[in-house]
Amino acid sequence: MSAASDAGSTGGTDGAGGTDRVLGGVGTKVLFENEYCRVWEMDLAPGEAGAVHRHDHPYVLVILDGDRIAAVPEPDSAVHGEYLEVDVRTPMVVEMPPGGIETAKNVGERRYYELLIEILK
Figure 1 (cartoon, rainbow, N blue to C red):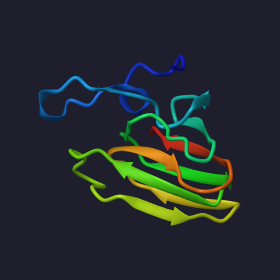
Figure 2 (figure 1 turned 135 degrees about the horizontal axis):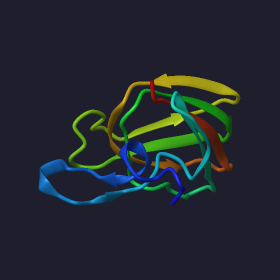
Figure 3 (figure 1 turned 90 degrees about the vertical axis):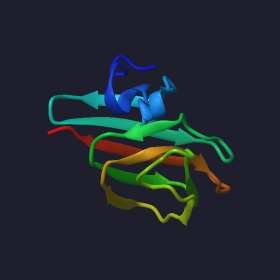
Figure 4 (figure 1 turned 135 degrees about the vertical axis):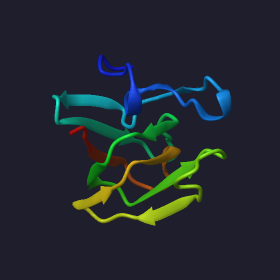
């Protein structure tokens, strides 16, 4: 867990239904953080999944490598409750709203690599 993993979308508990499920970060590593944004790296081998996490802030995905990615929602995820699998092209930039509890999984044949920028203010 990174030095920035003490609250919100960097880790913590989900608070859903009174559970104390521990959540991971929205990426595999924090590269930069200030009061305005937090920049994560997400690096997944084919078949690998990231940590179960929640997006507490709006964010931007900058997809730099990969061919297919899936968002696997947790059963109690209120916002993005459906499994989503998409082809990606690189480079690709996608703006996203804050949302549910999910796991990112590389369902492609190539390494998946992105920078995820959380907008904090």
